[in-house]
Length: 180
Image 1 (tube, one colour):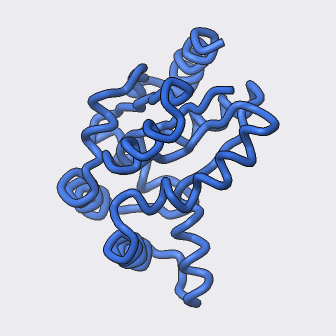
Image 2: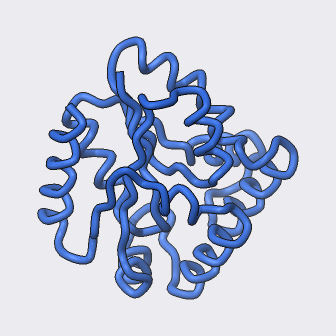
């Protein structure tokens, strides 16, 4: 069985890539679901400010690898039936934990888009839209506080998502074929 973890900045296209992996039979695990569940438990609305607050609190309380730790049982259960695609690996510490647990079964796919392209997309997205200023603030926080650059730097594959969706999906299909 294989585990593919998608990493990239907000608005880069990770969820589109994850959907393509799902079509190829991979079970999708979205690390951000942990934040959504925690927001629901606390009775807080799904806003960028609340998401940031909850993400930071979880990491302070449980360490930088908290999302990988909390999702490992979901990954293990899904691996019993299929390959797995992780939508949204965030930190270097999460990468290190997953690599330690899964070894060579884990492959990293970075999805890259320029800030201007990503900020335009983020403003149009129907769920969790962000203004350009919010997108830039999130970039800064993810790079400086979450150590997101490391997993991007060590990716096994990098998809360039500056073009249209069809181009991204074509690149994704090639990666899926190479992983078989």
